[in-house]
Amino acid sequence: MAIILSWIHLLAAVLWIGGMLFLSLTLVPILKQEPVAAQRGALFRKIARRFRMLVWISIAVLVTTGSWLLPERVASLREPWDWPGALQSKLGLVVILITLTAVHDFWLGPTVGSLLREPAAARTAGEQRLILLSPWVARLSLLLAVGVLLAAVALVRT
Image (cartoon, rainbow, N blue to C red):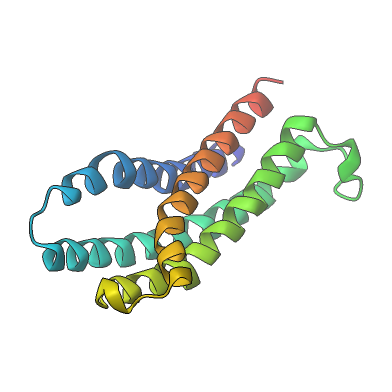
C-alpha cells in the first residue's frame, strides 16, 4: 500500500511542479511573443484557471497521501521535534508554498488580471507594483517547490 500511496503522492507533485515549469519556461515566453495583447491575456487566463484547479486537486492529494505516509517516517506523530531534519524542512517549505499559492491564486493573480484589463494610465503606483510583484511570487513558488523536491530526495535517501 505504501508504494501505491508514494506513487500517487509523486504523481501529484509531478503535475504541480511540472505544470509550474511548463508555464514559466515554455508558455509565458511564447505568449510574450504574441502581438495581440488581448488574445495573450485571454489565453493565459483560461490556461491559468484550468491549471489552478489541477494545482488544488494536487495539493489535496499531496496533503492526504502525505498524511497517510507520515507515520512510516516518524516514531511518534506527537513529537515533531524528533522528526528527521529533511522531513521538518520539507513540511515547512510545503506550508510556505501552499500559503503563497493560495495568496497568488485567490488574491494576487485575479487582482493583477483585472488591473491588466484596465488602461495603464488609470493604474495607481501601488497597482503597478502589484503587477510587477506577481511574476516574482510565481517564481518564488517555483523555487520553493524545487526546494520541497530536494528535501523529499534527502528524506528518502536517509
